[in-house]
Length: 268
Image (cartoon, rainbow, N blue to C red; front, side):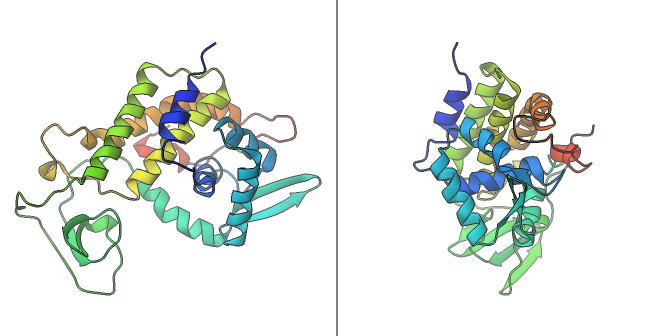
């Protein structure tokens, strides 16, 4: 039987050199644990990481790094070990999660902030100067000005080559999930969702979501958030069955809270 998950792993998770396993674990903790309970057992976490093609040595190294850096904490219950965010990790995750799981905009952003900043997600106006929608603008101590965009010169490139390449990769990933992929089991559905949301998280924390008036005509990136949300929820039914089921050496996870069911504007 063909393993339809493997192309997702090869082309969209392990495709950029050595995988930053610690970052992938942050994605897993944020996506599967934070909206339902505070920790996940090492046994369950290892099953997810194993299916994502991460070796045991890399898992242990990444978890040790997260604990050492103060992002995650380790706890014991009998023979079982559990991991979860510290307050430091949670404080970093929560603002990012609002951006990652935000619903598609009903309207184009109107209010913008121009600031002297190298923060990500801005439209580059000049070296060290960018434009951000006010609701996702960086908090800067330096010079900044807020207002409306009346017009933009043709010389201002809203989408960099790197931005375009990553948008193309996400579009291809979505096409594979829609046309080709079918999970063989509930764990495969969760693993596919992890590939999707990890790739999306990296994208949305790095690049701006360009408004229609500044995007090239017909640019597929305008629909990325909507399509990511649709693919996310298509995988979630089976993924939740695995997360809410007990297994050999671990208990079922708790039911998610309301915020989980509002991701990407979904209403259960």
